[in-house]
Image (cartoon, rainbow, N blue to C red; front, side, top):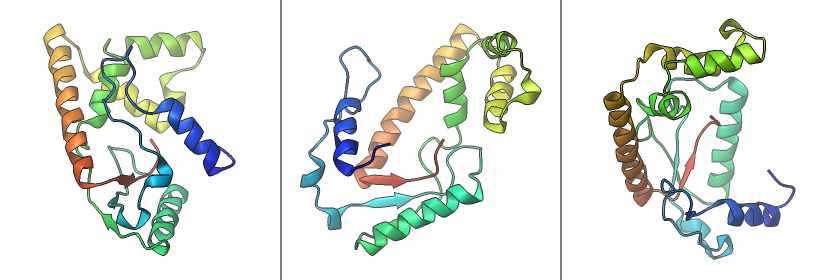
Length: 168
């Protein structure tokens, strides 16, 4: 992400927080990272989010991160799942392709590739999208569920300050 923690903090200050033009952004203010009492952080760690299992190298990196937190005197609680874990991919697909896979297929056609050549995560996204024949009501139900999930995630972070997890 950056070469120094100072640069990471600068990037975070640009990216984090609510934005007036995005009604879905959470109104969470960014505090000065140097003011965080490190020893008081409430940290959770999870090995998997959603249906895709992380590879060995990613899990090793996660465990090394947990070890670094613990070496700094921070307790890390391993948890089994995060809010919405069972629904997260469906919500991502609804936001990415509510057309039943037609958008993905058209994009692949323009790239002169096929569904069979997709990365497993992309293939899963396509398969989930293709399973849905969205009606307006079904799509709105999913969007409503997504906003409920957003509230669940915010409640989750009432109990934790940091979540360590695999990428994606």
